[in-house]
Image (cartoon, rainbow over all chains, first blue to last red; front, side):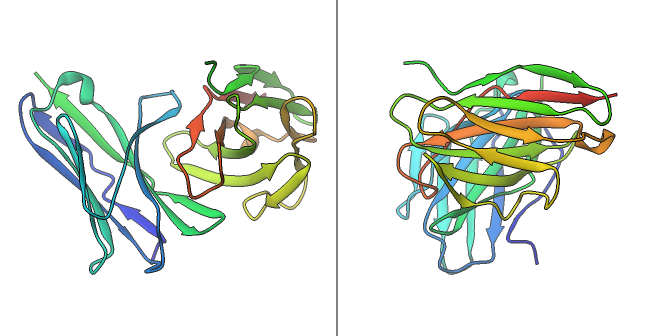
Length: 109
Length: 114
């Protein structure tokens, strides 16, 4: 099993739709979790950290499920500009962050 | 507040030449990470450095690749005797306190080996 696993997609959704991605991780001792977005041929940009209690930033909601070892990202009211690849990042150990391979999202008019 | 800077943005090398990629972390950040991304693939961790120390180089190929982060100046990723398979985007990231904290990425260096 991969340390950090994401559904590669692509997810093709219409504008205004709600879409959710999951990311599973293998190390139950992992403590830090993040979502990044990466546009084509650009650097990853931090979207949000994921806290144990869940957190929300505008249209974006991130949640952590420790029992099942996954994190999720929910995007409401999708915009065309949300089209990107979404990367989940999990720390395996104090010096070991692992990136998922990414989930590609395309929002269509 | 300047972000992470990388140069050059694009680098073309012939097989057998050396490639030197530079990364200046964000102000106040002393932790630097290098990643490689092949076309249509995910990010692969290469090395984690603090000033004058390599903390984790478990992702570095055993030969031809080296990295440093001197007391003064940028971090350098060096690839000796490049081969076509080294063609990729190389991203540098920095963080203020260590790998458990969020990392901020530079724009990357796209290396093309001809």
